[in-house]
Amino acid sequence: MEPIREIGRVTLILGVVLVGIGTLLYFGGKLPFRLGRLPGDIYVQGRHGSFYFPIVTCILLSVALSLIFWVIGHFRR
Image (cartoon, rainbow, N blue to C red):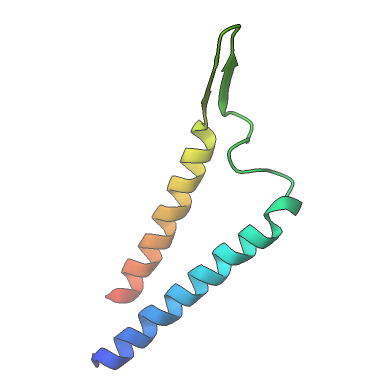
């Protein structure tokens, strides 16, 4: 495949990903859920401190990034 054509394809995919991220950030405050405060995230508050671990948020982001990288890898073949 021609190098220019491959660069164009990668640039197009990167542009779509950036538009998606920008849309999520722009409309993020209006979504019915907040990343980092999803049901299932662990939050324990004691008298002298607190502990927060966003387990569901981590799983959701892992699945989303895995899907994005799989699609990019599929089109690079």
